Each structure stands twice: as C-alpha cells, then as structure tokens.
Image (cartoon, rainbow, N blue to C red):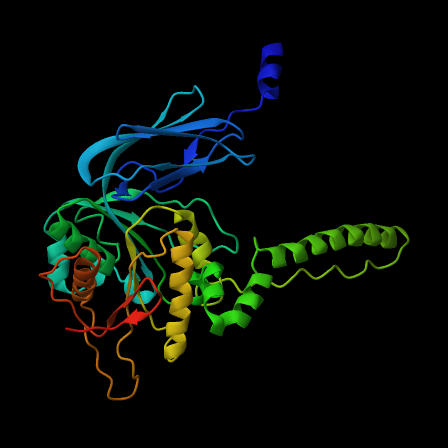
Length: 393
C-alpha cells in the first residue's frame, strides 16, 4: 500500500515531444539550417542527433526546446533522427530524407483534390508512386489562439494517398521531384471558401502602411498580443470583483449585478477574420522550407488591387514567421478577373497545368534552370523586396 501511495505522489516525467512535422517519413530542407523543436519537462537537457551531428539545448521554464541542425546536402538515404531527454532512451524518428520542402496553401482552388481533377490527371496520379515525394496534409481546423501542434503525418506519394491531397500541390511536387531528382516534401494547408484575412500572421501587417488601422484593430482583438492580453487581464480582475459583489447581493436577497463584458475578439471562421493561420499554419513554424505556393479562391472576389495589398501582408507575415525573408512566394490569381457575362476561364478544372506553370517558375527562378520557358499571366512572383513580378514569356 505504501509504495502505491509513493508512486501516486511522484510527479510523472513528461515525454519528449517533437513538433508535428518531425515524424517518420519527413523531408528536411537541404542547404539551410534546420530548426528542430518541441516540448518536454522544464529545465532539462535535450539532444538531437541526425546525419552525424548532435545539437543540445536546455528547455525553458515551459518545457520548450529548439536546436538547429547544420545545413545538409540532399540525400535520398533513409536515416533516423533521434531526440534524447537527459539520460532517457532516445526517441527515434525513422525514414528521414533531405531535399526540397514547399508549403502549398490558399483558398478553394488549392484545396481541389486529385480525385476531383480531369480524368487524364487522375490516371497519371494512379499510375504509380512517386518514390522521392512525401506529403503532409494539415487538417482543416480553426482556433483563436496560435497552436503548437496539429494532428497530421507524412505519407509517401502513392495512388491511394494522393486522392484526397491538393491536386495543384501534388502535381507541383511531382514535377519538382522528377526534374530535380531529389526528395521533395509538400506541406498542404488550405481551406475552400476561406477569405485571405484569417490566414494572416499579424506580424506581416506592420509592413503594409495601407493596413495600419486594420492592424491596430486586429492586435487589440487577438489573444497572445499585448493589447488584447492587457484587456483580458482587466476583465479577469473585474470578474473577481463581480464574483464578490454577486455573492454579497445574493446573500442579501438582491439580484446579482450584470457580469463584466469580455474584450472583443476577432470573428473566428474561415470566411471571417481569424482562425486558419492560428490552427493550420502556426503549428508548422519555423520549419525550414524553400518556399510557398498560393492559389486564390473566390471569397475575396471583386477586391481588385486591395487583394494584392492583402497578399503583401500575408507574404510578409509568413516570411517573418518562418525566418525566410527571401523565400520565393509564387501564387496564382483567380481567373477571370472580370466577372461579367462574357467571362472566360483559362484553365477550368485543369489543376495539373496550373501546377506545371508554378513549377516552371520555381525551376527557372528558384533553381536556376536556364532551359525553362516560364509563363503565364495568372502566375506571379513576389520578390524578396516585396515587389510583384508579372513577366510572361
């Protein structure tokens, strides 16, 4: 009996938990330092080993830890990444490759799955696996607060696994894999019907003077930022005072006073102001990657150049969060621009061609392939200085 009581009284040690992208089958970015992070007990030593190098650190008061592996060349060799806390047995993460990593996101057109595209493309995807291509599908969820984890895993690109994966992201990754001959990891995080605003990282709005008032309003309504947190602390204090006042009133036989009103928050929803970045992008930060691809949907249709301003905010924010200020950001605008009666579409339902155009721009501009003819007006590049490049050949 005594030993059982002692066991119950002993605090349990937390299991070392790497961030969700560090799972079996992952692809790590080549030629760049690779952050590896996670959580465990506070103030303990954590060591990460991979490809002949070991990096150590001590967790902070909340149990967070992060190290950075040195830049590595591409490798299709299946290797193991180990994470060890103190003298405990190491956690083994197997079948890790090193190559190119891209994040594909956006609105309805990016969500469009392989199973929804034209027959020819479905047949191509079903023809066999792409051995060096790995996929990471982020679930479509929402949250007011920035999340650290997400329920997702890496999968090989096989005829079965790609059916529900973004067609544009899959065919983009497939072309990069076949052309570059290195492992490619594609992270897909999109939400059909979403507006661009809930995808914003607030940090990006600071660089867009036209959105200064929007930024001020959003910061005052966003959990985790000083303005909102200060207001919420006052609300908590007012709540304590109200509890005392309400108790006294009820004890005396009087009605309780009205409860204090909490501070306003941004409207949560993929069609509203916030929620998708917090739950679907932030858990990935600051994973090392090469760049981003984005596909506009119809929810911001009609905004014209205002949408371009909003895109600048999104791009600036994501680059800041991923510590990648020069990362290429290729995106596809919604076609047609004019929604009149005579509207025509460039590529209705042909997502593999959209992916091909994105891949051609990446191969030419990011990977320096001089024999690539890139096109076309629907595809843009935001350069490192924030300007838009709309060259069509």
